[in-house]
Length: 420
Ligand code: SAJ
Image 1 (cartoon, helix red, strand yellow):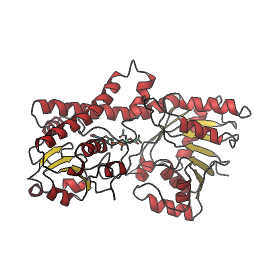
Image 2: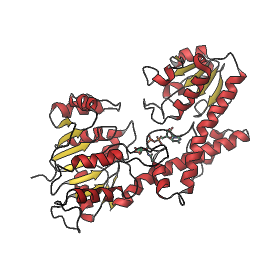
Image 3: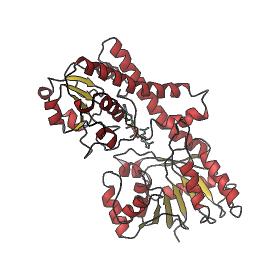
Image 4: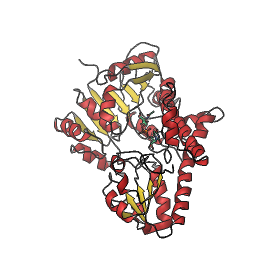
């Protein structure tokens, strides 16, 4: 009999849903669980509630074959995967309430031999805490154990590492990092992931695996902070930062990332806090990087206000709202923060362009700003603030934007005098 026949996925969001669909397509029975009834209904009907290339076709296929079903509560299975959000609270401290609720929800259905995997980004020690909680609440179950696979409940951490927009490809091809609370747990989880992952399934401990995930995103945040800091230094000395980076990156061991209006998304702007919160006395570079990246957004707002105040009758095109190029995701978006500030201050003079959204987000609509395509904005505006490097903006020829006064936070219009 196959070792893993039935899988419960808790959380049908950006990670849980594609992972559930992928596992279902590999011959396992998957029950997708979410506390949001509309999500359970949508996915249960074969549709999707997030936008991700190729996901609609895969979900529709596995739902119609019966391999993926949805429910609001877990049921007995061989494997339980927890893929729920782990945000930070107002004090930048990890909020594990969804993880705790997910663990609580499986306690009654857990049985000997089950594998419990946490995929959510989590502070060091979370997987061990889950194992302790299961032990305390289900003293009849043996959790973890000594290295043998002897019918215990096995607990492991395996972080997701996929890039929005490429989730299905990266789910299959990226290497995975798998850390059990014992080597036996690691081995069992490795066997499970090898059923649908083509990349290597690298074994480590639960704590190391938790820190690996946090390290990846904190590393990127710190490197983006370097680029953002450099952009401010270049501004002061009236040097083109894009040119500096381009030339510096010709050095074989230098790879400066790109400055921008700050760092957005649900991961890179948040995960470093999980390390900072655990070791505030040691995580000094990471802490400063967070500050530098946040301050960059405020600096762009100040510069935009100064430019607009110099042109009291000009209309202002805010080009892009999403947290990065060519997606429709607004989570933690610095572009949105800039647009909201300008909308609150200048109202209808602001014309928002966001080719990946069908309508204005309600917060912006409240300020009665315009919402138009890039061609209309170029015709009706004298100022442009480029906040996202969408392909549609990159393609605009110089002739169509020569009349504009531009703040180009993404360096996409390099053929004209640039402010970064
Ligand atoms: N950004 C810059 N300059 C750059 C690169 C990015 O300003 O040179 C900004 C982007 O504009 C965006 C933010 O950083 O606002 C984050 O974008 P991203 O493309 O770097 O990353 P995410 O948030 O889409 O996905 C990241 C990825 N992590 C790493 O690359 C280390 C992904 O692999 C993770 O799975 C994901 O976080 C996650 O879920 O943790």
